[in-house]
Length: 214
Image 1: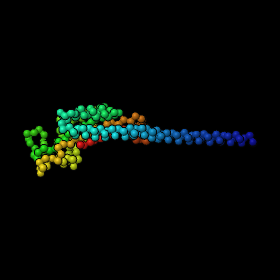
Image 2 (image 1 turned 120 degrees about the vertical axis):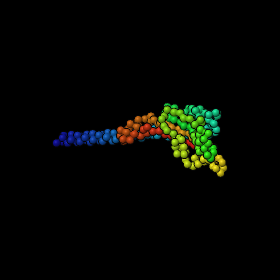
Image 3 (image 1 turned 135 degrees about the vertical axis):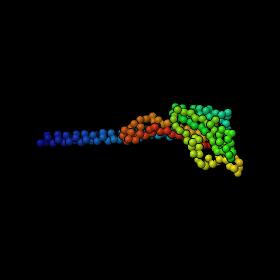
Image 4 (image 1 turned 60 degrees about the vertical axis):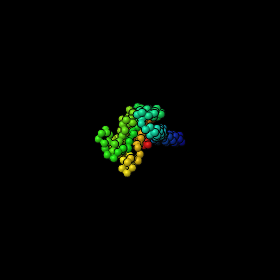
């Protein structure tokens, strides 16, 4: 009898270790995807934050420079030149293949009534196509356009471009709008992991943008 008891105790103790190891493996299998997702999220959300800062700075810088050029067609910088400068200054982002930049010059109304002799209705604000341009491989639509309400501007800004009959001029002569778009692509497998384990593809097909109005 004395020889049998130790054997039984050793067997039960071994079963306990196996159970604990099995539970540990199960816990690791559950926790590991979460830990990986958190790690990848830290990396790619950090890159996303950096990309947003770059786009914001580019839009502001582009808007500031373009607004000082009264005529982008014949001035120091053409709209195309300025777009090239902004693309070159976007490193590490590739705005040529994964982005799009729009530069718009919107002129104020110049007269109270439309002159049928002019090609453009200058009795209301209009887009100056000669001083506007865009470039980039990313297919994305601008928020500015002749078919947009108030040309895509806010009603407050648009109202300052309208002809004031009392003053016989508009409050301001023009506004410059710069829009920068970029398709963000994660460097980690965060999309596949979040889709596989959580059925939510994080950062999938994300287009970020920034807009500056001067």
